Amino acid sequence: MQHHDRIRAVEWSDEGLKLLDQRLLPGLEQWVLLNDTLGVTLAIRDMVVRGAPAIGVTAAFGVVLAARDRYVASPDNWRDAIEEDLRLLAGSRPTAVNLFWALDRMKEKMAGVEGDPVPALLAEAKRIHEEDIAANYHMGELGMALIDGPCAVLTHCNTGSLATGGFGTALGVIRAAYSAGRVNHVFADETRPWLQGARLTAWELVKDDIPVTLIAEGAAATLMKQGKVKWVIVGSDRIAANGDVANKIGTYSLAVAARHHGVKFMVVAPTSTVDMAIASGDDIPVEERPGEEVLTLSGARIAPAAARAWNPSFDVTPAGLIDAIVTEKGVVEAPTAEKMVAMMTAC
Image 1 (cartoon, rainbow, N blue to C red):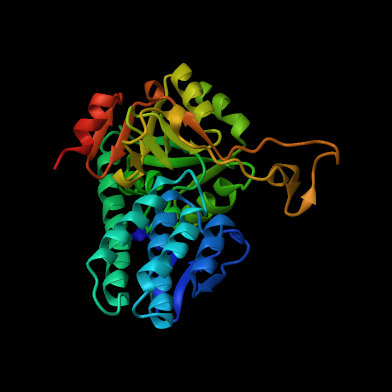
Image 2 (cartoon, helix red, strand yellow):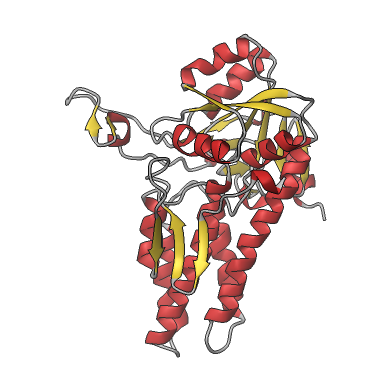
């Protein structure tokens, strides 16, 4: 399985936090070095790094940089000063709950720190990163077990090493299933308007020697009608207490088409993505991004000057359309509020 897991997009070094700039892939593999909170915030907001788990890991390291700078500037008052940095990081992206989960965890660690906070906070951020990778490996095994193969699967957006600490959520399941001979081909939606499927998912799969065919979103229903895929496997940015799932725009229509065609639908995400404080998907805040992302391509306008665009970054798939939610704590088949509580409270 290690053979199909070569990529890491978030790295801590003695120089600072290094992020693989995902806006430039696949044409250019370029790393960004960050040394302050503002830089980390802008990197999250401007999509240098994306994917809910990766955003959480990045934010945790952002807290380390903030603590380092605030402690140097004011050893006696750094806790008060860092609140501004935490607000900045929290405001970078609204939908991915992993961001807030990671910030809360770092705040808990700060509470017990005396003296220089950096060693303890750096250890915690590294722990968050390592735990995410371990969870992804475990989810890979759990999700793989649901797939009767060999078969082809369809995925949407990017849920791999680029979107997580490493290995991936939905793409982690696909990696594990490919290694085990249960998946023999991957169809990837191109994922407008940022083209994460084309630029990132296809790039990861090619890097790891897994066969991939790219399709436009509009081709997915026909692909299913022709019986070419058995599963749709996606990630999530927030899961409500009843099992409704917020994920990249276009996921909901895939779930509707999958149900119509008898194709199974799997969501793979760590429990840090589950928000038990939100009753249903109706209450999940959905980020709307600038219309320019839809109206332009690589900086060139592709629509008439007077045209406007609506650009929600996510949609919500009702629990009733989902066959299985896979987390590191277990598998919830045909999710309901009761089953979600049972999974979240399991040891």
